[in-house]
Structures are given as C-alpha cells and as structure tokens.
Image 1: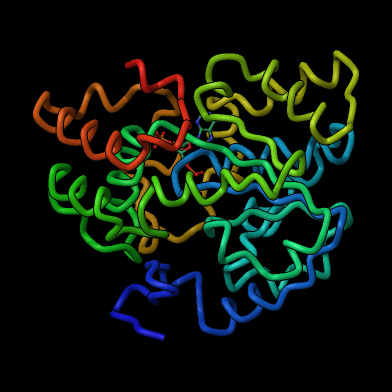
Image 2: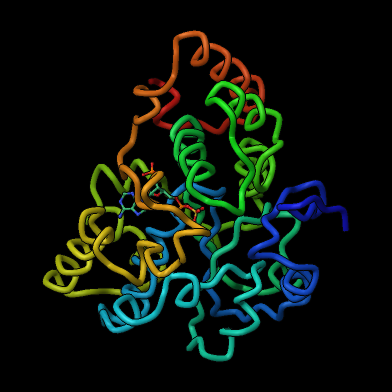
Length: 288
Ligand code: PPS
C-alpha cells in the first residue's frame, strides 16, 4: 500500500496513519457484518460525532451511561480504524459502527447482510470550512495552506477519503432499498427533536416524549461541547490542539458564508454542479 509521512493511500483514498493501518484496513475488509448491525456512514466532517452521540441513546432506550463513560471512538467505532478490533468484543448487539468508506469499498458481508445504514450528508462548503479548521488543529493531518488552496485539493479529491461528490453518489445505490436512511446535518441543526424522531422510526424504536426531550437536550451542541467523552479533550494537545480550533468548533450550518469570497463560491459551485448534474440528487443547500 502506498503511503507518505501522514497518510496511507487505500484504493486511491488518503487515510491518516495515526488511526489506520494495513491491519485495520484488512480487519475492515474481512469484517463479519451481522444483520442487526447499524452503520452510520459519513464523509468526514458531516456530523459523525453527533451521530455517535445520538445513536447509542436511541438503541438503548435513552440510557446516558455509555455517552457519559465511553469515548465516542470506542462507543461507536470507525470500522476501518485501529480501535475497531480492540473494542468490537465489548459492543453489545445491535452494534453501532461508523465508516467514512464509499459504498463499493464496504466489506463483502455488508452487501449480503440486512444491516441498516444511516447516511448523514452536509453542505460541502461547510464540510470544507470544518475540515480546514480541523487540519489546522490536528498534527496528524497535512497543513491545509490557505482556504483557497485547500478548496482546490477538496474539489479534486486530494483530501481524506477522496472527493465529496464521489462519496455521496456511491451511497445512492438503489440496491440498498429501505436498508438506508438519508439525513442531513442541516436537518439536525434545524429541528433536532424531529430528526431524532425520524431516525427512531427508521430504526423501529420508540422513546417516551420525556426521554426524547432529554436525549435531544443532551445532544445539543452546547451540551456535547461539555461532554469530555465526545469533545476530544481526552486527546493530548500535541495531537489535537483545541487552542488552534476546537473539534466541536461552531456547530452551525452556513458558516461557509463567513469564509468564502464570491470568486471562490462561484468556482466551488461550478465544480460541484458539474459533479452532481444528471445524478438527480438534490439538497436543500443547492438553493443557497
Ligand atoms: S469527523 O472528524 O469526520 O469525525 O468530524 P464530524 O464529527 O463528522 O464533523 C465535525 C463537525 O460536526 C459538528 N458537530 C455538531 N454540530 C452541531 N451540533 C452538535 N451537537 C455537533 N456535534 C458535532 C462539529 O462542530 C464540526 O463542525 P464545525 O462546522 O467544524 O463546527
């Protein structure tokens, strides 16, 4: 497998060496998916951490113990990362897992199983901004340069997990039928309680109105920011320096408007339009 100082190149996709190894990727490929497994799928910076908070609460009837005692990366592990093999035995069924992988690279047992998936999408302009600040604070990622330079890399897929558009398109596979549920970061921002209600419905689960209120409150940005099991404050500062930019940074939609010049916006829109035209995939943010 090709690599440089910071990244492995896995099927053409950059993955950070600090969290991925040839062994972890082999583990991912040969993983035995169970029918009751639940995958949260995201392109990086689309709301993964948010889902790692929400999903366990929905699967265990609103019990706060796991989200208050287990770091998010062990609570709902990334299947492709090195922690997965270490914590898998500790997960109770139904197991909740996250992955940044595109559809076609999923383990073969995922395709033959009945495991469900939730795909969380986000406006790529906000993903770019979030990722830019993440690259500034994380010593295991390359220097992003200027936002304009980073945008060029993002649009050509020279970033973690490749092109955003390729990821989104790959997961719109009709073979998945009703095994997959699509939701966006923007829907969660706009009406978290309503979005959680729809996720519950997809999972065939219920919570009392009181429990739903408590879960919703717990998963608000300001509260997750205080949760040491979810705000990455357990990671040493030399690896993630929250003085440069906190991991839970702003938690809003539309922050790109504070960062993009009109020229950059035009270039970005044209590139994404070119990628997404003729796909029939529309997002609410396309109107912005
Ligand atoms: S990663 O590195 O791929 O796991 O990152 P990911 O968790 O997908 O994305 C990080 C962004 O999600 C925001 N976030 C939230 N926003 C609103 N409410 C809640 N509760 C929440 N939890 C995480 C986080 O702040 C990052 O977005 P930005 O725009 O940088 O603030």
